[in-house]
Image (cartoon, rainbow, N blue to C red):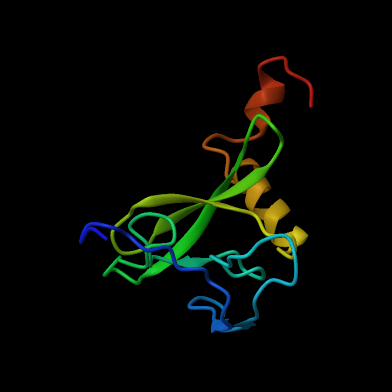
Length: 125
């Protein structure tokens, strides 16, 4: 085996969420890997490439948005709170629906202009 071979580490262990402090058990179904908290959707910057566990950063990864693929599958967009790297993580079968909808709706609750401007310009809501 080459010394440049990168091993893949399945994340099937229980962990404590770096952000909300809740205990996160391995998923019961739907995936063999757990890479974010199903309650608050945050993660930890542990990989350089998916599954390699080679990142020295180890900072919290904040869930900042969602990405919907052409096939309709959702992924969470995470940004590292230390180094700023962006990563996509597929949602899990037990992720909080409330947290996912709140994350998806966040841009609509933080408009860069007053909502009234839409009706003032002749638009109807």
